[in-house]
Image (cartoon, rainbow, N blue to C red):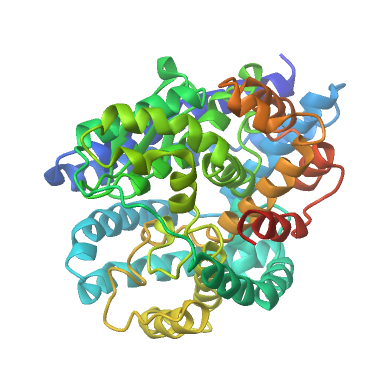
Length: 493
């Protein structure tokens, strides 16, 4: 057997254990009784150690060297490159750190679920301190190997090829035009009247709305499902995708758009090339590209007047006892595109959303690099919220620095992906419009031309190309943030 084929077989074995870890992680967040967390955390840590050991088999170095000399196709060469990147990322981290971080993450995330509701920063900080310490330790090891800053080393796990220098430039530009644009939009919308929807939306009916919306968006229910968790997410594996949302009985907008967002992630996973299943080249290119798909579904598609026109009859049918006149496409569009400064990132409109991301990026960058300490986070968060959104979170930890789940996992370097994703999504939409009549597809209730474009240009290419190559092939150029700015101007001004 060729060494390339041996490596492929080995990575498929690793992917099967990662499959189990992913489903166990979903169950931990969505189904597991509270008392099971310690045992589950220990089991996941043991599984993480096993995968780490598989990634560090002594003979792998020889296999890579031999495979590199083999006569490989272009696709196989890309697959070998991704396998080697995964191996190099994993092998430099010692086993005891892998285990310690897995255990600490399970403990911190599980406690956060109740600590956030209690506004218990002091309790959260006990576990958060350990997460920060272990993440800084990991970042230092990666930075020394890569010759970069700590934060750049962690960023590379989520956005290969992107650096702090890139992000600083992109976000600095956004900060020159976004505040004035938000002010203009809010002023313009003062003259608009939005009809209220009422405040009694049974959760069972909201779930039916979510399921109908997922069908409309092409979700394959034979290979996935919808559940409930404290924080909406998409998990599982391409053949068994698990998405979650959360419900409030007094409103339906956040749960429905949470479903649309996570369905974007899920359709990307379900649309990855089947013949590369289990191989690193068959996975999503980066978290920025992953977020581009969820934000394409949620923002570019889901908040358009045309798409909301398809949702309108679903709402009228499910909530006929409510103010049915409010469920017309025009009023839905006004409600779903309302811009206002708010505390919660996942509920933010697309115009103020980048401010939430930039705030988190600046904090986690300085935290990982050791410029600030974990105790400084609430005060800095409050200062940046006041500067960027005009709101104070002083002593309001649950709506401030404790609102997100990412840092409980030690996922430092993830947050920039959200705004990069919004920028990619706008650029993909602009490119799509050159060959696809998007509004016609939506109005005809046949979204297949939209999904076909995404499949051909994004989903089926998986990780066979770098992010820059993928975006350039799809749009004719690498990331160009001006498309995002233009999209906001067109929709809101």
